Image 1 (spheres, rainbow, N blue to C red):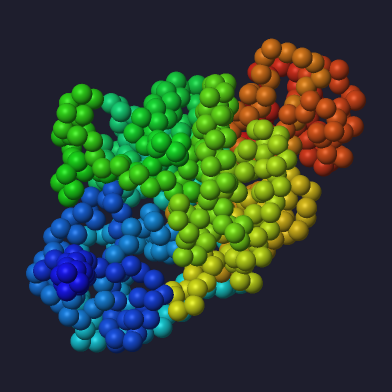
Image 2 (image 1 turned 180 degrees about the vertical axis):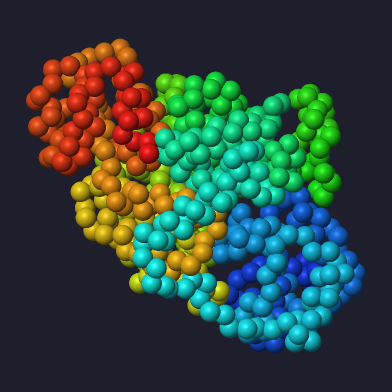
Amino acid sequence: MKTSLNFLFILFIAVLMQCNQPAKGQISWQPFTPQTLQNAVKQNKPLILHLAANWCHWCHVMEEKTYQNPQVVSFIQKNFIACKEDHDQRPDLANKYREYGWPATIIFDSQGNEIFKQAGYIEANEFLEILKKIKSGQIKYKPSASSYTTNDTNLRSKFQILTQGILEQIDTIKGGFDFFQKSVNYQMFEYAFNHQKQAVFKKWLNITMQNSLHLLDTVWGGYYQYSTYGEWTNPHYEKLLSIQARYVKMNLWYFYVSDDSALFHAAIKTYQYCKRFLKQPDALYANAQDADLIPGKKAHDYFRLPDKARLKKGIPHIDTNTYTANNARWAESIIWLYAFTGDSTYLKEALEIAQILIQKRQRPDGFYNHGSDNDLTPALDVQLAIANLLLNLSQITGNNQYVNQLAALLSKIKNKFYDGQCLLSFLPLKNYISPGCILEENIEAARLFNIYGHMSGNMEFIEFAKKLQQYLMSTFVKVDEFKEPSLLTLQEELNKEPYHALLLLKQNTSENLSLPLWQIPSFYLIKKTAVSKQQLNENQKEYWEFFDSNTYLFCTNSFCSPPIYDPSQLKNFFYDKLLR
């Protein structure tokens, strides 16, 4: 009997080991970790990193056509270590290699040096030739100079170059940027929105937002990620939660200045899509819906169908991972929906999402995990998304708990991520790839540190924002169109003190007078509703005694606007003082 049991146990182990082996003719994919990199060094083999997304059409195609080609499989299995990662699950990799697009192919030599990077689908024969050149040493590591070059060009000249770069890149005929893909870049949207007094940006904003409606799924709602061939009518059908968050916010801001109900209804329809298809049982939202109903096959015909016909065929795969940064930015957009509708269910939902993220995603070190599991290392992007959410919640609720959490998180970011020049994209690990300084992350961080410094009166945060800005500009040589607008926005904010927008509630009223204040579409505006003198800072307390009725004020440390008693007049101040 004992012999039989031993035999069965050995048989079970053998079957289990067989199950864990890749099928014949398949690649032995491994996770991309410090240990895998060390193994590549020990085995003296180059390492392939296939960085993809489960919603990405061309990722499906490359996995089906290239990575299942028998010659490619055989050559990789014999000569390389192969790693495959979902970029949505790995912010340390996604942010480092984002500029290469998806799928991204990164190859390291046997010493862990990057020797090859390429964006997009690579056909099997072409890829095999690349692999052979790497094996033979024709493609090898070449130490490169820093990505950025210091120069002596004065700041004014640099900003003139940036401004000219924007004007050269935007498409004032069709909207968006003047290249192959069409979508609305948030940084460019915000810059144009803030500069509507300049005719070129007002024109661009109007054309872009109208044409962006072509990316809206008119059946289910939700925005497709982008369109191709320089037109707005050739969409890639993936729907990412991060994209939905962006469009809800942009549509509401644009509605504020245009009264275009189509954009308002698009924001509502986008929320309804996300709630129907992406909301999970734990109240958080899923990452994305696939572009394809059948992986690797274009879904043009499917997305032309009405609701019931689509459902009959099935629903494109939903990536049910609930990532922290995406949910934080989605909750921020839901707050804007509350401001524009007055429907308190939006605010309740945003608060619920925030509570889950704070309670379940915070690490022992005070940072936040990207997902439900502990990260390999904290990522800066995740911390900035939480910080933005805390900033919005602190203003719309007036709850000091969020202010304190924001202060603590920003302090930790400054102390741990700062390397003396910039904020690193993730905390360094031994025997792992080096974190970079991602421009857009450092710009976003500088803006957060600056506005929190003004909100709290703590000059240390403002000085740190200026230090980051000095680094960004001292290393300036040429940045792409996505970074230029946000660099200019940061500079404008550092050069001007923000307004404190105050509502002094001196009398009871059934009308929610806070909503018109919260609707004002501006990041660089500190909003507060006060029902008592104690809720104001020392510079503001004297205002409380001056007014007997409910009053709006816009103040800096040296200036206060005339009192505004009629909420409808807030738009006039916005147009006169906040737009450029």
